Image (tube, rainbow, N blue to C red; front, side):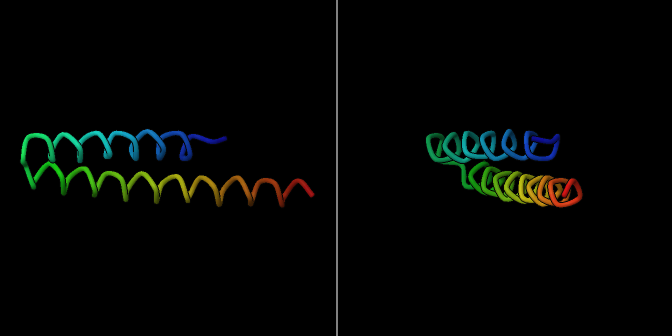
Length: 60
């Protein structure tokens, strides 16, 4: 597991919390920010996943 995978997972989780908070407090702006943070986190995690695969391939 690398830094991008961990950071991406944390951003995704934080985005989910922010989105839910926006729903609870009826704040479309916070909901949108939460969704955006989730997308950013998932993208960063995917980059980390690709790096791990590349590292595994390089070992072979």
